[in-house]
Image (cartoon, rainbow, N blue to C red; front, side, top):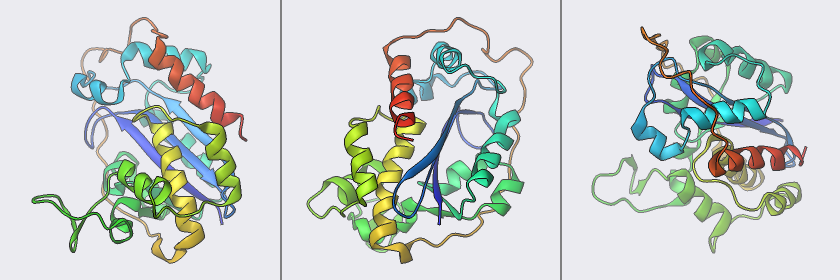
Amino acid sequence: MNLAVLDFETNGCAGTSVLSASSIVFDEAGRILDFFNRFYLPAEPFNRYLTRVHGLTPGRLLAVRKALSADYSLCFIEDWPALAAFWDQWDIAGLVIHNARFDMAFLPEVVQNSMPCWCSMRGLTSLCALPKKKGPRGMGGFKWPRLGEAVDVLCNGPHALVPPEAARQTEEAMEDCPAHVSLADCFELYRVIVRIQAHHPGLMCFRPLPLGFRVPRLPADDGGITGAPCCDAAARTLLDFDRRLRARL
């Protein structure tokens, strides 16, 4: 049974544009079979606040697209069928997303209704058993784990789960991940899910998650799409991580 993990970096909440879309496909033995990693420009003006979070500036996006010889659309809203076709190609049994209600809202209803998914943020709450502080949402006496917290508990901590051998070798080869970019977050989620697949497969319950879909509205201006590529250290880090993971296929 092949599974896939998914992560988006976006220009805001539902109804705005996807800036990067990444998905990793792996089998029951934890072997990575393929991955999808594409970068896009927004239909609306860049959200400068979120740029400080994920670092995807217009110049870096243009530089990475150029370096990867991107021959796909500038905007995800026109390219999402390629992601759906990628999953179809590998006969995905289920899609794992950390905070599925956020990311799935950026996919059209036809994908939401046809691709069963499981939210690892909610599904791992009891297993991670992180106590609530005043205010955080969660289930019972525990809070929903952030992805980094799930990785710390299940992959790195004193009670970490042993990964399948194929996943262990891949983790050692990949070493450090860049912070908070979609492919790196996918890789961290892959690390968690291969362990769940091996030790707690009954936790994962895949079902469609219909949320509705809001199409990003094109602005009157160009939305900041034009500009000069900027292949700085951050852009080179994105390219290097893509290259290292591709070398594992």
